[in-house]
Length: 495
Ligand SMILES: [Cu+2]
Image (cartoon, rainbow, N blue to C red; front, side):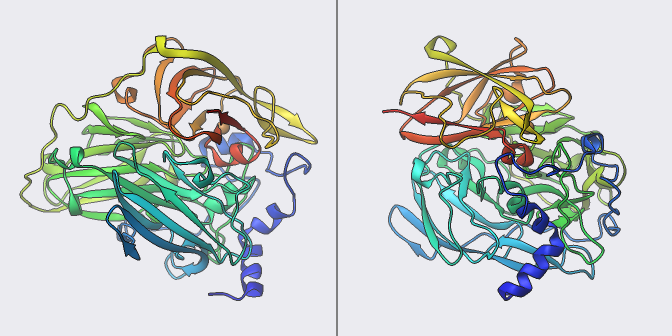
């Protein structure tokens, strides 16, 4: 553990120091660098910054974040304790990187939750320079446990979060949600996987154990000394080093059999179009909210920040000794390759992918009582451009929607911000996509979602039912720099 002074010295090098002094809410000019075109592909230099030190692709060994053990187990609940603290880790060979991690780990430890069993996590903040609010992304939880951006944990304090897990099995994540500071905090490492499992899914005989792995994909930039460099452009922060589970472009030695990959785009701003160099399709089995009704083969999977997919990749068609590279079709140069699977051994495979996964309860358009319109755009906020919803930056004194508990509503997101996509996230309840520009969703998008990509000039209608918990919740763009400045609103579920 670093002393506070040593830590602040490090933080200065990290580059968040400059961000911290600009304040929030629309005052400071020049919060981001001007080069938005660089941000669009992520491959050019942003305002003359040197590229990160070189990484030899596929040299580092793939790993999965450790699964956290509960500190106490009761009949219907598991208790955990985590401490958010700075830590020095080696991400680039021979260089030290200060991260902010749950338990000092980047990404944080994985929580394995069981449907119907409560999870109680006591979070302690030992970060001198952050006041996190921990949010369970995709979690169906009471407002007081949802990590409202001002419900922060001061330095040295603790806060308990209760997650009932009365929802369908899905790959969720937990991460910081501090007001106007989510982007740098998550960038520094405050994110982890939360895998909610249930008996229905376990009965399906999908690949499990060592063959069921999370891939938490993020991009980061580094200074020559190994420090994380945070220099967001207009469209957000783009790094030139791709990390999977905190490892730069790792290699994963696999058997020639099926794997279940839970793929998280946990990048601040970067979008991906995932492909396999072998040309084989992924078989998508889940969206953000868990299993699809039926598996969907896809050769390309677009994924905006904090969308997730779960896929089965069958390496049995690949000759032992051959590599398969997971690629990003949206990138060129050093960010185009994400990781490599080296098919290095034969192994029996008794898992299967059934043709029917989980019946989907469709929300009917006719059940909706209200349609709400949210136009996504840019506006001048003080002296700089800011991201807005319905021409308004986030204001925690303003409520943007007041659904009644139990009601079903249609929310229509329209993107009027030029070439920038916006992954829109709604807290509290998963939703379903009704249509994109009037066309029904593809089979890969018919499942439950908590984050939906709204592309340039696109109008996406989603349907959502507000259940169980009254109170104030957020909805926002999950490009984290957009969210912080200030493409976010709140809804107040009234009993
Ligand atoms: Cu956005």
